[in-house]
Image 1: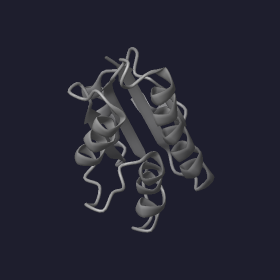
Image 2: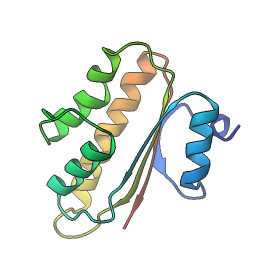
Image 3: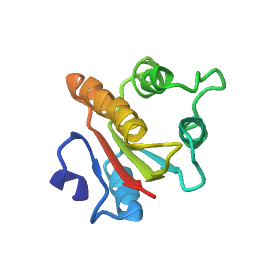
Length: 131
């Protein structure tokens, strides 16, 4: 029932939600749960590598924002129909190597992915927190 309280295609701060509750809600609704703990990351490259490892992206992942978008949309779409997604990006860095502009660019990729999936009537909810 937790996911019924959140718009189906959104990128938002995790706030009052707990990761375990989101994981359970994804499982109960049959949706994919993608979780990346980015606590150990410092730079854009670190963040992209952390997400790629956590989400099990293919080895040919280009480690740039365009490749991230492609992996979150087209690559997954080509693998068949999708039930929906709950994505958690925990502890996105907040430092000079990964500044506000870098964080916004990263979140824009997930906003664009949410729009992509909305056009296909597939729920895509992304939650994030900062270090």
